[in-house]
Image: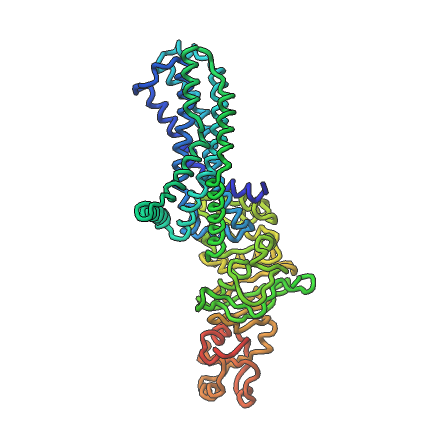
Length: 294
Length: 297
């Protein structure tokens, strides 16, 4: 990556780090603060190792999920960021191309920060897991958990999740960039306009012409995104149940490798390729808009 | 046009700038700016100054020919911006940023930026590196922006109303910094401003725009040769008015003055005392004068 692109990535961190850190750190911090006073239900049937793994993975998933939702909420507004305070003119006076500037923004918000959130969630997951184990079974349960084994079981799942975030972003890229492009042109009416356009066109094609193409395309994108993140969650669940039955720590490495292969195979899809073409077109429109914004 | 062939940093020929189909911001302007010049760009609000500056830095497409530092501003904008510094508007620094963060970002984005030089220039102001832009007064923001831009080792500096919001001491400090530390005979500055009297002593050349037309493009040395200003007794006002000067105005002490483009009628030359036309008076004479709308520079 060029120095300029890295600097643009750094800009995003400088501008948004406070919000990102709050989004990532506040939920586990709040959970830990409330844990001594609240009740934990629904997991006590699992053994200490199972509770620890659940705590670790749920914390990772929750921090990632909250951060990703926040990023998706912010993305449309990023298309018109810097316009209100006119700082766009400062950025345009510096030798960074429009595609570099937009690319750094999208990459940071839609991919790098969610990846970081997953890692932060995993890092805090140890604390959350310890808290849950102590809450449900006391200190003796905590001492009974083979923590290194637990980390060893969780890491392949984490790595699979990180790959899944990258692949999921490819599937969701057209949707994210469509709303960004709509916001760039239509400002606060961008997102509602996209929603109305998709809804009305889908209903008209479906009810009047019997064509479900809009719903099918949307469904394919979301299904692809879901499979990218986790292709076979049921097999992971089965393995955990087997671990609890037999008491043998499971090896998630094979599962992660197999699940990743399934996710990668699903990339060979016309829906993904078409979606990426749409995303590229929207990116070009964003560059065009920034180039002619004066 | 390559600047190896000429010493001109900016070359424009029949440059026309439009917004949409009907609004013409600049019409068929031709000019060149060589190295080592401090050029004042004067014009009323809406005359086309900002549009011209945006075109020079590749932010506005135009018709005709335009070359800045030997580059096409639209097609080679990235390479161009590495070699010039531009202040579009002094109140545009991102409000969320600290001064130190801006220095870090500029170090990464502008290869010719010197953070140490920026720090040295910042020491002349009351702003600290840890200050956040949103907590600074308007004048302080201007000072920071100017310090950042002046820390770029560029060949061309384009400043759009750079001293708006600065008090007189800060303005003078900026002009001194510009002349003492930046202008070295190889670099050029194009500065648009409304404070004509203040910058007159700094300028080597002046360009005046009036409603999208370049009505004057001249070095200050040539102004005296081209324009004649005569100070005369107020009782002779009618005689001078009959000669259709560019401008008639009052001076202190009850006297009047007129400006002619070229030599005045011989009969009037001896009736007044020749004085040097100021830029302000020339500006008044050449802009918003209906009789001059059909004239070119």
